[in-house]
Amino acid sequence: MKETPSSTGHAEGTGRPFRAGPLLALMGLTLVSLVFVYPFAWMFFASFKENRQIFSPLKLWPGHFGGQYYGQLFSGEWIPFVRVFGNSLLIASAQAVGAVAVTSLAGYAFAKHRFPMRRMLFVVSLVVIVLPQQALAISLFTWLDALHLSNRLAGVILPGVASGLGILYFTQVFRQVPDDYVHLARMAGASEFRVYTTLLPMLASPLLSFGLVQFILAWHEHLIPMLVLSAADQQTLPLALASLYGSSLRFPFAVLMAGSTLTLIPTVLLFALLHRRFKSSLSELLVH
Amino acid sequence: MRELRSEEPLQRPRTAYLLLLPFFVFFVVFWLVPLLGGLRMSFYSNELYGTSRFVGGDHYRALLADPRYFKALRNTALYAAYSIGCILPLAVLLAHLLQSAWRSIRPFLTFLLLLPALTPPAVLALLFLLVFHGREGLLNQLIVLPLGFKAVNWLKDPSFILPALVLQTVWRWTGFITLFVLAGMDGIPRVLYDAARMSTESRWHLFRTVTYPFLKPVLVFSAVYLMVDAFSLFSGAYVLLGGSGGTADAGLVLVSYIYQQAFTFGKFGTASAISLSVAPFLLLALALCFLRVRRS
Image (tube, chains in turn purple, blue):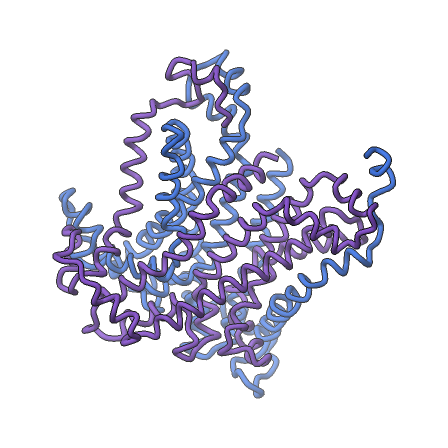
């Protein structure tokens, strides 16, 4: 909401719709955020605790902070942590870049071109949203095997590139670009691909925002990597952590919690960096 | 500018198809072929390699007589309905609160709310193993016991398994949907509220006449998103319940049933039939949602 000078001058309670009183709202929000944050705080502090302490969740603070569980994680004693972290990073980045490139190109075509069967192709590509890979996992798995893509990172990266959400999003984004820009570039004799690339800089925010979403989705994916990657050093981070649990009763839970804590870093970091762009492209999308 | 505009739109189909080509290559290879492969598989007997033979609609007919299939279908539908029914009102409420609180703390609060959505579901499920853990779990220690109830065995007691899955999902997505709703609410012109306030000061009335109609597309989109996510629920149920359906199949959801049929029992045909049997319903639900938005 745009905050105009006059609206701040209003008496509390009438300045904005539904003004519950900022203080009251803040109290409610603090309570809710506590519910959201407490398990994370617990996870973080648990990465310093012995098993015995972990299962008394009301004692949040660990006795002492020692890095030994992080050390065990990095030394590869339980899982090849560095390796699987790298795998996940590679898979998520490659899929994000691939999906952005492929779907933005298609979105440009859908938004700025008229051609036979345009509507039909558009609708067909949206069906991907409703029938996600997970639903096709079984036959995807046998098909990837036939393509010799099983146990390869590419087997996890490639299937996620054809994103229906990306088509929907980028068609909308390119529709909002004024036609004049496109015509100007065409008048200057640019090829259609060149027109597309000249538009990209002004679309940095939506491109990065969708890339972020795709990165997060790929970083989180569990079923497809589980089916495709069976070798221990080819696994992804969530897979390795999930397999660690239940491997033995004796292993220190803190190692698992340390690994889980580190899993958060890339997505949180990326989100913190792109937060502003993400918010602006979100409201851009919803307002127009 | 004017003259430029008049000579377009561009009618060069070949170029447009070329731009679409990369997407449709991926679409065909990694979506259409698996879909057709799955369809074929669902009409063939359960042997995986070579020896399978055509059985027609046998797998589908068998499903109609399979109580576990209906159990999984029912659980998934309930899980989706409960999750959406909890998340959307909560998100609208939270968005209202965020709008009422001071602007300067918004980024920080939205970040906290988003934290669960940034966490991989497998890790989240690991975390929730501890939250739901027997007597010592966080939920029991922090809420159930202090309120004077008996400790709930969340992941073993059949009447609490599905609520536990819903709870986890609500916790995961509410913040994300809130951000969405908030962006939608920020786009509502203030004049509309001023106009509506001429006749009433009732908040509920303002919400119904101004906020809700504007938010409707956002809410429908969120519902569709959550529904598709609910029907592809795997990680949460798999890690929390160890790949089975939990006690008395109370937590058996479609994707875990598919997984079980395929990789525990080796029945790839049955598994494919299950996956494809849901597709028409999802398509129909999606079409209905979009039609309703289109009309309003």
